[in-house]
Length: 208
Image (cartoon, rainbow, N blue to C red; front, side, top):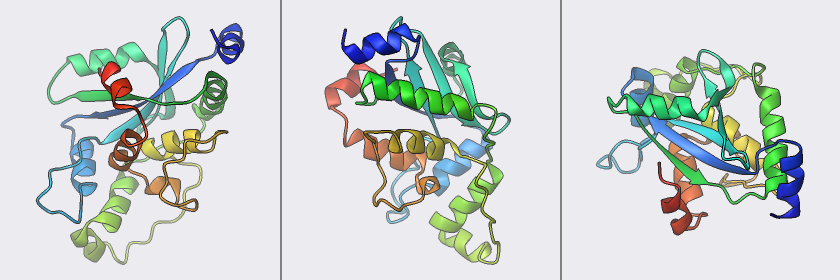
């Protein structure tokens, strides 16, 4: 056990974390996957994921999920709920990418994420409109007069997850450039960028 793991364990804090991705056949999920597909290649399939979340793992093996939900905002859930959700079938899929973050940094990210629970609201309708304006040619034309006011107290799933790991120290910043807004990053972008930074053997080992 490393010194960082000992410190986190004594405080009953997580020592490992993962980026999680999921999709289902609900309308919001379908819309997000369609709008975030590769716009430069119309023959490419839809994005594989519509949702992103963080998984924190304690030394005991217990896991908890932090994620942005439409009904609850930034929320904390037992990992078992994800297992039960996926087991229902019907197009429900999920996968995890292990994040190369030291235990002491993981515990700091967890504390900040926990402070968001119940405090930061989420949104879906506004997100879909924004995605349509940003990535769809039809959406850019149809919604060109639709102005979205800034909503600093709200967060979408990939925005919150990427911001938490990207603003830690040392950061795991997957933005293309330092000033890129966090809510520019879709689950699809996060999936592709994280995969390029993580060892393939580690990815296969943590497949759900």
